Structure formats: structure tokens, C-alpha cells
Amino acid sequence: MAEWEGKFVHVTKVGSNPTIGAKRREEQMTNKTLNNTNPDELKANVPDAQVYGDPDTWVCICKAWSKEQGWMKSTKALQLGEGILVQVSTQQGNNIAEALTYVPGAIIRERQDGTYEIW
Image 1 (cartoon, rainbow, N blue to C red):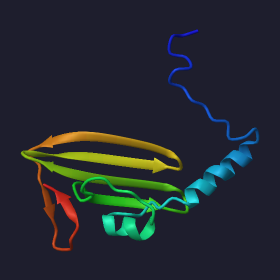
Image 2 (image 1 turned 180 degrees about the vertical axis):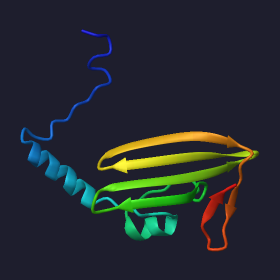
Image 3 (image 1 turned 120 degrees about the vertical axis):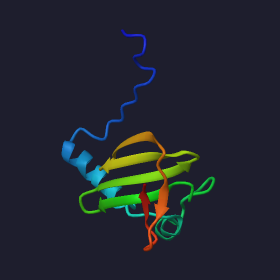
Image 4 (image 1 turned 30 degrees about the horizontal axis):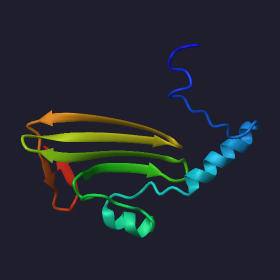
């Protein structure tokens, strides 16, 4: 037995019937709100959402989603002195992937329409 076995691995059995498991995952996705892009939308769409700190610290650069297909992709940015921190997120069903990188010399600019861009 490997030293790590049983320490960090947690497996939850959804059910022995894969169709039932898929339906449960689908039901969970129908309850998720994927289209929030600012704190006001979060409050309106998720009444029990809890927030710590300033939710406007990160700005949404772009976001795309499909509630019907259960996916979401977003790019957010945080101004840090002489550069920015960029976070990209992808959610497909209950699977989430994120990446973070620092871009020296870049800035976040607000466009005339109120959206943001990276320069």
C-alpha cells in the first residue's frame, strides 16, 4: 500500500446505475447560476451568497456560458502595481479548471461601454 493511499483520496459513490448518477449531476447543474459577472448580479441571482472582502477587486474581462449545456468560461484580472494578475476559469458540469498568471507591464482599462480590457 502506498504511503498516501487513503489520506487524500475521497470517493463518493453516486449510485451503481450510471444513468441515475448522470441525472443527479444534471439536477445539480440546473441549480447553479453560471452567468453572474458582478456583485449586483450575484445578489440578485443567488440570494444566500456570502461574500468576504471587496468583490470588485477582480474585474471580469470576458465571460461566456450555457446553462443548458452546463459550461462556463471566464477571464478576470486584478491590477497589481506594475502589472496584472489574470485568472482564467472553465467549468464543464461539476468539473472546474483554473489558471493564474502575472502579466508585467499590463494594465486594466475600462471601455466606454463599462466593460474592461487588458492593455
